[in-house]
Image (cartoon, rainbow, N blue to C red; front, top):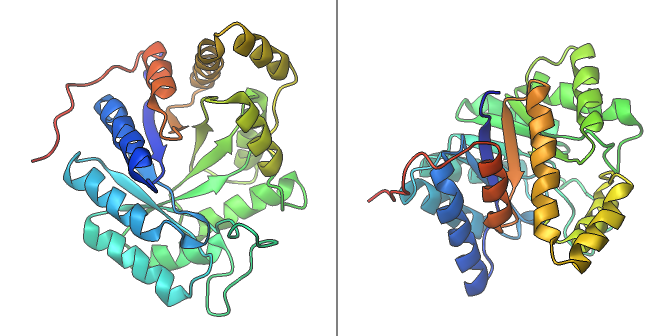
Length: 288
């Protein structure tokens, strides 16, 4: 079995303790030689400057290939493309282009009067600049706002037609969800790479709550399994086992790339990678 290419998502810190967690995560995972490291962008652009600072550090001090998240929320087209230009000036060559979630307290996404109405429009504008490799989101389990499962396929196809290079999926725990989605995408004529998103379960109760909000299906057996594992003090061992088996099965199905949502908690991701045969390529050498 070929060792997969991996990439990692981090989120920018909002405080001293969170900063320690971020850079501990980077120090732990950067030696695994990721294809890229992405940095999230809070709802409504709430972490815009923090995202920019984190991206700069990942480039300057760690020499990583980075992908900055960019959304359409609460910004004009000009403001959004100005952020992309700042990314490019920083040395960022990849963007994860998203419509974005509404800020906390808002009922739902509202298009800015002078803004991009969708991720498709954002992708097209970014592609026109020629500055970036563009990655977009995909949803093996139906997006909460999608009319039906076919709507997610149609939207993904539009994003690729607008200029996206690859897609990263929402996390899932049932491999059949991903395989069905991949097959339907191929039937629809999608030929670009769809990279599975992997979320190691750092806290089962939090994962359940978040999954309910984003419509990510959870296999029925997991609730009882994690309840018993938590009771017996082996929650993390189960989390590593579940994710490792999922990744291994994906690799058996021809998947060559895995994207880990680290939650700035690196130990689970590191141990899953180790179980998959992904070892540090060398001791971490920061860029001078």
